[in-house]
Length: 119
Image (cartoon, rainbow, N blue to C red; front, top):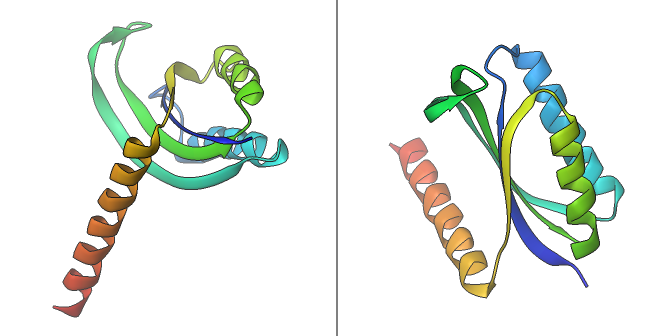
């Protein structure tokens, strides 16, 4: 049975836009190829880190919310560790309340976007 997860990872700030898209695409394809389903993605862009990682003070943040089998998470995290472009990552399993919260947050964002387009 598939569970819902959310992964945030920080990529090296020296990557170009194309390299960043390639890294994100690699992990999205990995999820899809193993029978998972990408529910939502957000690119948070270049942000300042709370503390230096590998002597870098900024990084590209990216969030992927997806459904996958629990056995797949270990494989995904091994790939994050192997990929030199990824400085840090965190994968969390979402319970029904977190899923509901994320859906409400996305709906609210969508309403604000539509309202802005109408003006």
